[in-house]
Image 1: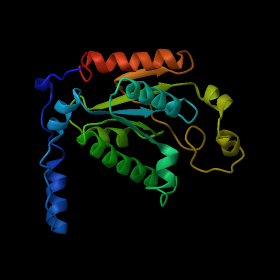
Image 2: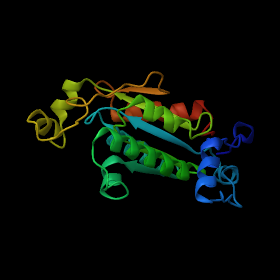
Image 3: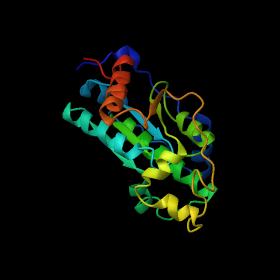
Image 4: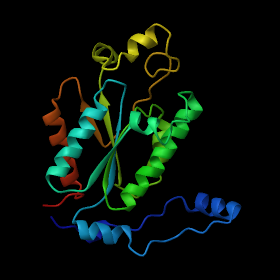
Length: 221
């Protein structure tokens, strides 16, 4: 693989917010000697985040891990961030109330940006139910670095799958603020990729995402 260097531009990540934060806390942003562009050129492909979003049971983690494995097989450096894993570690102090959900997504966005800056393709598998939060994360990245992958799946199908038994518990009132039952899910307005996980197989879905990465010249044969 090779990379088209003209496709890569240096980011302009929310300079006003960064400046205010640095002034308030007497912080200075440290610029790495090795830039993101340097890492991308060495890798031979562009880094980005594939942000999988959808209801619980729509297949986010399954598909994200399948794409991750495909990239690994092709010697492309990638990493998958899973919602449960993050909540068992970094975000274990957060609840599922709306404000904590927003903070959960904010932290994930910051972590994903670090991965992208390191030259990796990062895959995030989180319900991330609120459109505003996802758009806030999008603004952290350069143009074409944030790829929203919406797993479209009817609520009833997700409930029928219910791999963790969460829908049953939510219906019994044992789980509050459960997306799709007692808390809303806001579908993306203009996602880069839409996967109908009720109709498409994993193989077909992985192929569609991989083809998108090639068409956008993130991966170039």
